[in-house]
Image (cartoon, rainbow, N blue to C red; front, side, top):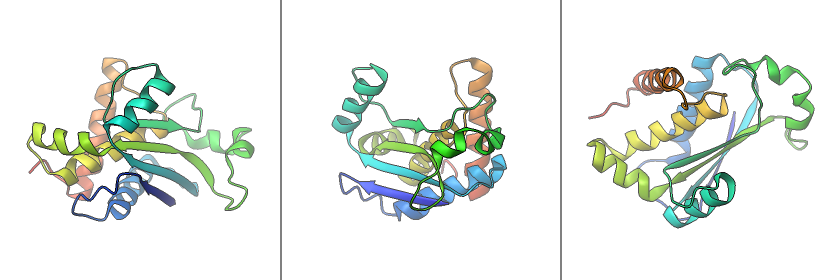
Length: 167
């Protein structure tokens, strides 16, 4: 997997952003059974930047913590057989031959404030948001209560496997 990071706001969380994001993303893909060679883009922005994106792409006129822009269309979440079908041609990066899986945008301001609000580390909050967004890129959603329960368990499983706790 290739992970591209654009840190628009020069965020410094006290850890290597790219290393942690890649580790979380790799763990999600491993636990989901995705063996495809993919690339993911991660942008770190602020409340103003994510507010503009949220308004433009979702019609919601407010900032949020994370946005996910999946490139893959799934019939069933986590069913990566779709990567072998007709979509594959449109998803391949012509320069690398890897599957352009999607993009993640994280709000630096919310990483910090939510870590404080929830009483855990900035590292844990950042890792949680990456895991959450990667699951969206894998086709999961949380619009219905049952879907939310599935995502919550998967998120906690990923962070638990990495030893990233709420402490």
